[in-house]
Structures are given as structure tokens and as C-alpha cells.
Image (cartoon, rainbow, N blue to C red; front, side):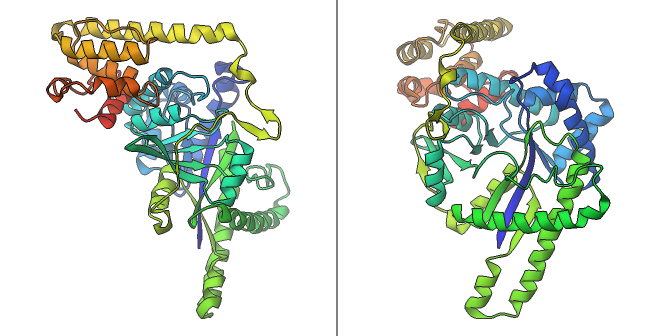
Length: 451
């Protein structure tokens, strides 16, 4: 039996062709309004969201009653969050420190407002993927991720070799279970179920459309299953700013799922009358579709016996090309003045955060000169762009500095390896970060290093 996890989602770029505000009022607000109502109409339905910046904008404008409805859907698992960063960060140019900072911003909001802890990365649209980004996600406590934009030759080969799912090694003792989308993060070509039956279409055509979609999608999924090691698959269901008519779209998808599963029941009944090899061959054509989330999918994948020893990967997946001689690398060098402002702004933010935290915790200041000296040497050697640490620091502040600037800096973790070569008696004096603004950083610190 092929078990297909259908993951409804909407990819909402905070910055692309329009401004953040224009995208919000033009699309995002309606999408989330529609999804909220549609999920409440059926407990089987699910929806997955990635961009915390948009969700926070919408949630803050909700009434107390609407916020309570959202929290209820989160508790039941119908509404899930992936990535969890304020945005979906670029992986080719962005400094790992900046990646960690925006992850902390998003994770903190989700924790404080929805009591959500994110476990799955959702990097479906950066133009290529880096080990540095995977290392940041793993350090922040994520155990798996979904990616998409891999060089077309590499993706074709991985389909043939059943290597679209693997453990991405980001450190000698740490890896991130990674799923590469088969084709794209949108509905399969020809089977965009959000538009198979448009509002206003003749009702008489509805049954035939459901039957056609169910039959064709089942065959497509069986063909795709040859690219995977197990009998579970993930099917992304959405696209850019999709599900703005969620009530209508979910109704059609409900019927397609029901038709596919009814056919599976009929097939099982037929196969029950067969014996031996004929029965085994018969059941291979069984396809079952369920509404799901990335968390549920990875849990099901890990339970598969055939996935007990997945392939392993260590390198970057850059540069990205989606077809021959068409590399997506122009953005590496465009707008150089703007790019120059990014590290300067990042350094200013870091300096402001450190200074502000130190001021607020002045009463707790303690001398940790030995550890600070080691940190100064390590960071100045391996990451000279990071502001130098003061000679007197609170232990909490220092731990957060290590978490942000060390554990999540380069994928090699060179600075940290030098720092933690200091005697264990010195290390034990540094506690885990407790700053309310450092939830992601604190989890990075605790999960990456044994103190």
C-alpha cells in the first residue's frame, strides 16, 4: 500500500513583486481568514504555515475569540507550523548569524503566542541549499527539513537512485533528516485540485471531475513512488499565495480523497480473493491519501523499516539550475550597495542586543574572565566579523553570545571547537541562556554542546 500524506500549504513571499503590506492586504489576510473557517468545518483537514511575519500580522489583528479558535486548531494539530523563522531565509548569501537571529524572532513569537515548538524546516524556495543553513536549523532543535531547489541533474539522478530523502550531516554527531520535493512545492502539473472545479462551473460536471482527478492522481502517485525508498510519500498541495478560496477548494479535495480511498477499499476486497504472488502484486496498486502535515509525514517515515539506514549527505547544494545552462546565480552580485548594508546592520543589531541585555542584567554581572578570554581568541580567529566580547559579562549573557555567534556561526563550528577545548571546570561555570529574547539561541546552545 502506498500511503500519501497530502500537505495543504500556501507559500507567501514577504518580499517579491510587491511590498509586505500589499501582499498582506491583497492575499494573505483572506487566505488565513478562509483557512480558519475551512479547518473548523472538518477535523480531518490540515494546513501548514511557514512565514511567521505574515501570521503574526494577521493574528495580532484577530479578536480574542478568533485567537482562541486558532489556538484550538493548533492544539488539535490541524494547523501546523514549519520553519518557524520570521521569514524563509536565503541560503546562498545570508550569514548564518543572521539566519539564527531571524529564526529566534519567529520561534519566540510562536512560543509566546501559540505555545508552538517547531520541529521541521521548510526551505522550499531559496535558490539552492547550504550546509550552513542546515546546521543552523539543526542547532535550533529542528530534526528534519523539506527542500526543493536542487540542481536539475542532481534531482534527476537522486530520483533514479531513490535518494530524495537522506540525513544531511552538519557535524560529526549531528544531522538533519532531509526530504527533497519530487518536482515542485506546488500541486502536480495537471492536478491542481484548487481549480479542477471552479465556482460557477455547472454542478452536473462535478462527479466526472472528481472521478477524473482521483483516477489520474492515483496513477501519478504510483509512478512517483518509484523514486522513494518506502511506501510513504509527501504531496505538497498549494503554491504561491494559494488557498484564498479554502472553503470551496477543501470541499473538492475532500471528495477526491474519499474517491481514491474508496477505490483502495474496493481493491483490497478484490485482492482478498487472490492468493500467493498474485495477491502481493495486486496490493501494490493500493493508494491511500490522507490530509497531513510535515511533522506527521516525518514521523511516519521514521517508522518505516526500509528507512532504518538512510543515505547521508555532507556538501552544499549550490549553485542551483532548473534546466540546462540556466543557473540562478545573478542575485549573488546584484544590488551590491544593499548587500553591503546587511552585515553592517547585523553587526549593529547584535551590538545593541548585547549592550541592552548587559545593561538590564547589571545586577547579575559576574567576572568570567577566563572563559571570555578564550571566547575572544576563538571568535577573533575564526570569525573576525563578530564584535569582540567585553571582559566582564553575566554568565547568562555570555551563554547567549556563544549560542548566537558560536554554535550557529560557520558550519564547521571552528570557533566553538577551539573555545570548548578549555578545561571542563571552566566550561561548567557557564549556564544555558535564559534571556526571554533568546529562545532559539538557547535551544541552539543546549542542543549543540554538553556543558
